[in-house]
Length: 327
Image (cartoon, rainbow, N blue to C red; front, side, top):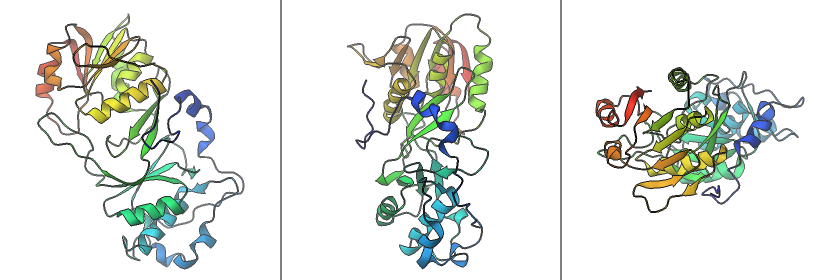
């Protein structure tokens, strides 16, 4: 399957290539300026906004401290009337770096390495940010407190609005079986902030350790495919991915390819979207899966939105799995 970004640019690349230089990706050079901006003090009280380029010009290496980049963004938001002159970095917008990779210090950002989210943003301001702030690849309007996606077939989906640029991001997820790169169109897939150790991966690791031989796994609410791909990396015998949210399935297929698991479109089998050497991908209500899958899985994984009652999910996949794991 060809990995093409919706924007038409070469945003997607094999994760093995991304990992080659990840340790140096956010490191400054010896000439980079240190970001000396107080996050809780109004930006307008710290610098002359009319002469911001004198303060926040780029280094020759092309990188800038995250706080400098965010100050540049905030300056434009103030210019456009999205924020008033009392605004500070803490109440401006949410920065999402890409690739998302836990670092010991504040990152220095190269071109197209940041997606920002603001519930107050408008299209004109967003387009100006994309034009003038090279580090920003995409601007979203949305409430960071609300989870993006769909809970079940009885619910309406919630998405952010992509105002300008491309919001495709990649999160680097560390697992005992090797690092994964998980792409997301961030206006359609829930935000997760990468950690040195993922709590979800740690739960999965303990479950997989119970099996001496390759296992069969049903990832019945797969999202972007993180847990199911981790199972494939752990040498699972078979993994079935499923999610009712079609954007999640679209990005799962991309993530399978990007992490080294070639995808081929499905044939005529009803409900099947795509398959590969050791996996299949479906998109349907969890409660309908038992009507399409006739096999019994060693492990069924349920990973839903925070606060969702999983009782009905557990009952539905209990028909398909020997062990149901709620993560």
